[in-house]
Length: 286
Image (cartoon, rainbow, N blue to C red; front, side, top):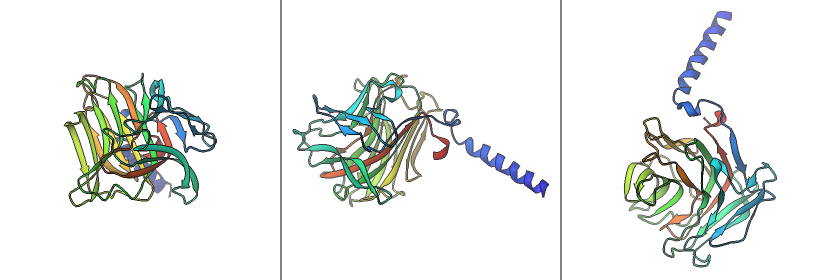
């Protein structure tokens, strides 16, 4: 009995060590929680100033306060861009039915039409620690409109390194595309500019949920070498897992669009809830 016990323990140790080798060194430790919020009591939208609208207050459940200041960020805010006085795009914190069937407060965004480059991302700005690892997860729900059209796109999440606007940086971006038959699918890429992907992944195997909550997770290990990593999972399934450089010319991350409503698939709407940000992939989520 004792011998079989030790054999079983030895097998478990080998399996655990084998599993751990699938993660890079930066993830082989328990991560630290940097931010958590489900927009519960105490969280509210501030006033719009020059197109920026902060989310403010302290989440009554998590104890974390807005705005988000991870990676040494100096500010974060919703950013109304070409919003046509918020007629084209708008956001609000509203009560809705959450993923567990119970009422929850969540960030609601709607884009009714495109007025030039209309969009409303939540931007984490002026990052000073742009070479650190980061893992972000939150729950989303797409409204029923905007994902039935043919040959369209909508952005979900992105980060840009310093120098991207000048042509010598890097962008990591996640999309939902629809094909010529109106079927939605996931697209994940790193690029030097919008027309020049350095790598890209199309994923048709994992369905794009419409009208139901789904979990989205992003992780990156910043590197200009082969040990870089950019991972995207939906409902625990891998959309894309890029191993290799995650920047260009040694540029650190400049800012993050934590969530985004942008694209030509209009009208469209979405909900975002239960945001968590860690400095690596925590053991409980591997």
